[in-house]
Image: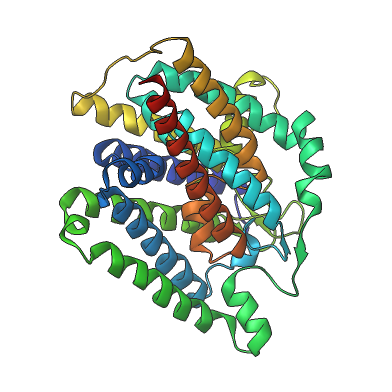
Length: 372
């Protein structure tokens, strides 16, 4: 058996993930790719272009992920999203919290990084508060509350919670063809819907939707194929080099990785704190956005308008930090990466995030009407 240089492979994984996240940040800045913005456009103006961009990205990610499952390259069961234990209440409550919070904070976790790159100082505050709240919900006081409340309510399934695994277990069919068929049916359907109207075929929508979806697929490949080692020469166990913990493959997500990034910065001298795919992705998105903003002359400094604006962003950041961890992901972590695996929990979390965002937008409109 050929000896594997784990250190060299780790460097390849990190650089590849950094490059893809750099591209994602630039795309998001250039095309205004934003889940919260997509929902707000519909609620406030009845405009669907950005929603079609986001749906296009989901469809592309679904097709790409499940094509790789069919090829035998990756397995949804080796992700955090497709575990047999369906934490449906956590997905629901966390999603509602995250969706409401991202409206108050003027964007989700990825949009926060994109705005930081473009010079928004409000988003820098959101980044820090969200990171602290997320870390507390991973390992601190809110983690104890999470584990003892919503995480107690779950369904134990006979197989993984991704649709191909569920159907394979129920029907006795092979999983890879089911993954390809469902990927084509659901992903292809979403792509067809996104492109059905002229607004979904504009250059900006195509660039943002196709580009973002392909980045998600690319990071899945980097983590699950390039970084996969069937037998680590040090531990003799399967490992995903560069991933958080090394036990599962992963794609882009921006709540827990933001917390881990702050942890890495604060304890940099601790040799046990190492760079991971998630941490370099956080840096890559912010830098990619910054480079694009400078190149297009859209970089500008922006601060808080007043006390209420500050309070809204801090509360929103707290809700995103706690909610994103409880829901096991954000609009990117669950809404793109998770949904691409066809996980039931990801569909629940995504729906809850959208509902939470709509409620927050209605709340803001009610506040404006009262002030008027």
